[in-house]
Image (tube, rainbow over all chains, first blue to last red):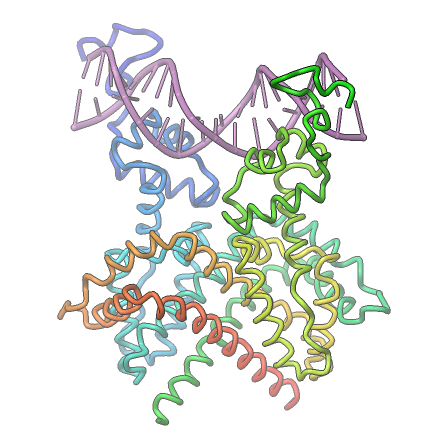
Length: 238
Length: 238
DNA sequence: ACCTGAACACCGTTCAAGT
DNA sequence: ACCTGAACACCGTTCAAGT
């Protein structure tokens, strides 16, 4: 460019500085990366602006306020998990979907929480919802299929979101499990002592700790599916 | 007081202005009230200070930083729900506990979330945990009693916390349900259309909406208890 | 010991002005 | 249209100084 030599220290435009133009896509990609590293609610708009080497106002110009950026991130994450094959029995179909969802959501802490509160955008969730509800309809859930779907999807988002929070605040949890572990031999409160023993065993073994998340999730998922299966039997019975 | 007439506009000390002394108790009570009105994370330390007619620094002096105030609020809320009678069968005992918990937690939005992330203080939760674990032990859950207790308590906190969030953002939800309702007759995606129809019916009827929370909670609680009961049968079988 | 009043380093958001 | 640079009204937190 003709004016490339005009200013030594601070060029006044992006291309004068050799920087690529800022696009909505680049902004959202950067936000996704920040979310993967720090969690959805642990980065600031100013950090995001710095990540794309721009001013905060540029974010507003291309995407909108913080909420708009967050929504875009959530939509992009939702688009990441694959659809299980339609031939699967309903229970296997959902087990597979939820297992995949957990893997993806765990990479972007905070997205599960946002999903469980706001729900997904129609556009982003359409095909998954459609397939899921149809699987339930085909299984015989009838008019209850949408409600059942919401219950199951909710359960998954909830359990992933506590995982997020607990991983994020693992220091807090470690401190907490120490306090809990101090009551292991209280003869007055045998129930509390048992809890204390259990938490202590969990807190001192990192392997069991990691496995605890997996077990808790699988347990919740299977119990949820059990409950839904029981409901299906009741529907078919009447 | 002797110096009551010293300054007309701005008295320099609290008793000169006829104000009661600030105590930790009064601060936490005010924080509890703010939490009931706006939710645990929707009031600021400056608002709290204003509520007790003091400077922000006074909060620090008597209680500590925001986290300390929040912890105190959570502990106070935990102390509010009564213990079900010990004679009840385990399932009835927990059903009663959880129903009471939901009533109390719903009055203080945000506390359930905090609980599901950080867990309760040992001191605040000791007696409830003790009784609950003992009820499970008596029912025959053996060493698994603490884990089962955590699963059930977690489930309750999670479902109450989404209720909190969804009530808080009801405007957002209303907007959302409108968008969802727009796909009621999409021939390409019959599953999505069914979901759309279901959400639309829910969003346009406030009675069904309120009842949706109740149903969702009861459903989750009963399915959770079902799952735990099945686990008990398995333990007894081996 | 208790409170005042101002300051600090942040945050999301807005806006006139430049190119 | 895109970007700059500064400003606005907030936030939690800290601190010297007063009584």
